[in-house]
Image (cartoon, rainbow, N blue to C red):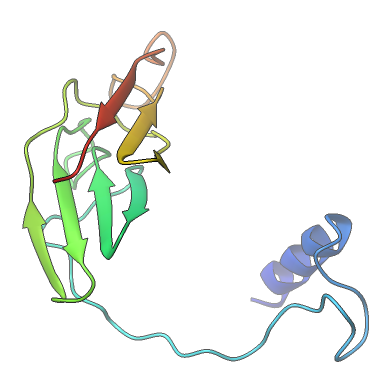
Amino acid sequence: MKIRQRTFFLLAAALGLCQMGAGAPGALPKGGVWSLAGAMPEPRQEAGIAAFGNMLYVIGGYGTDQIPSTLVQVYDAAAKQWKQLAPMPPPRHAIGAGVVGNRIYLPGGSIVQGGRAPGTTPIMDTFEPN
């Protein structure tokens, strides 16, 4: 754990995100409390994730089977509930996600298991939440 903390601090210092010394301007914040918000109905990894309003969208990725997925799950932070939405075509993992205006954009990613070339894709999907 100490190695990871030191590595993170060195990376943050190199990027100018913090300075040496307690209470220095730009120092990394301390504290906070973690709590379980709600277990996902289907575990995901390498999914695209985007926050839109009070909702957190988890799109595609891998489940426990390591096969690229079309699954779209959304977490309603106010209601503390998950629900499943229409699937994303085509199945992808290792995708990015970003919100611009009223849409979630999903550029690139991989369409093959394991993500090896030529599985990377130039596809750019958009999703408009209701």
